[in-house]
Amino acid sequence: MTALRGGEISSRGLVLVALVARGHTTDRVARALRLSRHTVGEEISVLLDRFNCRNRAELVAYCYVHRLLPIDVWPPPCGPVKGVGDVFDPLTALREAGLPVDQLSAAQREVLAGLTEEETSVVVAVQLRLVEADSGADAEVWAHDLKLL
Image 1 (cartoon, helix red, strand yellow):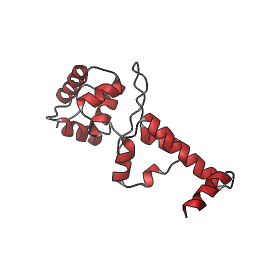
Image 2 (image 1 turned 30 degrees about the vertical axis):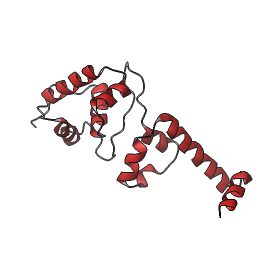
Image 3 (image 1 turned 30 degrees about the horizontal axis):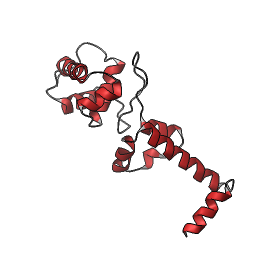
Image 4 (image 1 turned 60 degrees about the vertical axis):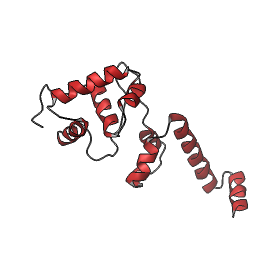
């Protein structure tokens, strides 16, 4: 790896690198970004050449070393991509819902990072129900919990 060439990386390039850092395959990245697998492969090749990296792992490391990806969050967040629409990031959605995602182990966060948007909505809904139950606002949940004991 050598010094940064060619200035900044596009927002779509950053999302692509973040997905690669999460271990996503070319096919999975293509589905997430609504691109062909060939386009994704070409964009990865362009980034590898641009930053003089030999492989995807080196590209991810390069992006962390040069602070193109945030170093204090794992896995790296995936955000909106200009012109493509939003790429759903379950960890961000769970954080925004008030769940203490960052207090979990890396293995637990990795599992949560693989949730679909629908699965994430269910987790958030369950969390909201439990919070309501804790505040005494939902006797049905309390009664159900007591039956389980």
